Length: 241
Image 1 (cartoon, rainbow, N blue to C red):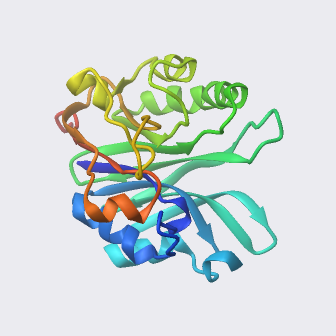
Image 2 (tube, one colour):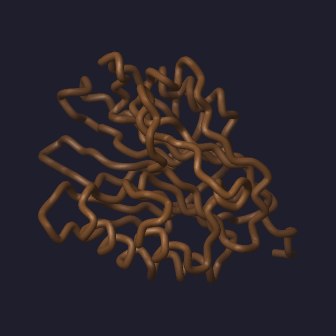
């Protein structure tokens, strides 16, 4: 399975141009089976009332689930998981934001690729250190439950450095794909001048990491302020259902 995690910045590129189709083109170039996306608008005036997850999924001929972390009247903002394979929502919900910063959420789906039932979680942590730790702790029961149904993939923009306390909290029962393959992290933010890794893919121990890369194509450099992170994974040998 090829999976991408990508903060799409409401489909507004660093050139100021709003274009969901351009985001879909970046994802298509990765040949991903599953896309975990953060910072999507749905029905918002600022983005032409477009449901961006639906629009991108339509361009890619994928199914999707969207979780709005923020709702204001008919306007929504949040995260989505898109898949070429059948998927069902397992859980979605709000994460704590103890200092009153922007609301954050998490989404968990099960994806059946015909051989394996993958548990895939997508999240977007906050900007404050205290809230990120609170969010990682709140996500721990989700990941523990998912690990009981392995294999598991946890994706997201965690807004933190690889050596931070947030990663130590999340590392229980997981491996991070970039560190697993090369021992260091390619930078995913910002596309104008990459200086830090904020975007991560974690996998359960029964998942083999075949490849992990940050595509820095000319289109990816302008489509969002984050680069996508792509991983190619192999699940455990199928068992009889």
